[in-house]
Image (cartoon, rainbow, N blue to C red; front, side, top):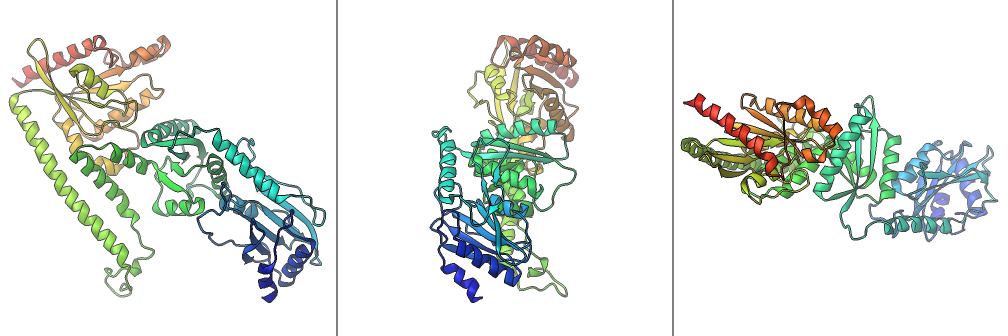
Length: 532
């Protein structure tokens, strides 16, 4: 123990990382105790941590999150021994990746305990091709000509140069988008395209993407350790602060991923909730978003063991108590109850408004469709309004209603609703019930579809499925093939399946909307005769 502790008093400042005497000392000492010995050495050559492992491996405990160097690397290198004659192991390289070490050096001893050869490994900067790290061939331990300080300096300069090539005026957080699923890579790739659009709406800048098709989800990290190492290197090279998963991940997976990557980890549901929180403007919208966020967070307030709960009765169930967890749970439940009551008031107020419309005999036409299909633009064009309409997903959250009077003295109320999306979180479906209640009062629904989108058919199916789940199939639906002017003749031929029900139109061109208006008035006329 004294000899091991004295290792901390040495200075490992030689260019190759060690002196010949230090290599002998480490190798002989490691062979005597029959265990690997490792040193985490800073850039001044002083050991910050001494590690003693077992004969075949070494365990590095969790390091402080604060990086000690100015660049992307941590400012620490690993110098350790192998006593079984093996080269740099996969575990050594993974430690280097996940801990962002400057490099890893292994001194391998022979059967007598004397040093035999040395091997180095280090990370590679962006633009290095498919390789993410370099594993140099072994060399004699006393003939190494490696200059570690120069090599680390060159790496940091490469990382800095990659930063300067980016748009420095863009202050958005950088993100990596990831899909881990049993679906085909084509389906995953299309879903990631939508996730990139969602990330852009949320204010993130996507710097890279990764797809993995698997047979079975890894319960601990959602993906295997090898692929996780690739993800870490991709995030390191992109200097990404956020890792964004296309699938919903469990609380345990999120916690494990955040610990091992030292980055913010989000899933698709959290991202959509964040977008809704940014865009909600009315009281009802804010209440609904907050309720959805609390419902998402509730199951993630989980203690380590039910035996810790003071609320658990029965024999063996009276633990010392995890009071902070119980207080958080109780507060969330109380807040959910309060929000639920306030949303009921909002729902009643909207119900009164709908009743007044019904008594006045003014029909209601609701615009529905996939998010960013052009519903708000269509409302603005038909009613000369200035409702927010942006080329972003979920630009409109709160329902907007406008009254229209036609030359034949026909009046109607046109309502814009929140856009639909595939894999809409169940928390949002429940929380936005008050918003979607506007559809229940609709006499006609106008389904707006973006025909210029490469997945227009899947989007139309997704909207029809949600309408079916809401049990609103009986309401007459008019399909509008929006952005018709943006597609080629070949694409128009492919959309023939939706004729004659689908109406080609451009939401910005008032003249192209005349067939739509005529069909709405025709259907309203039939409805009024049926009512009489």
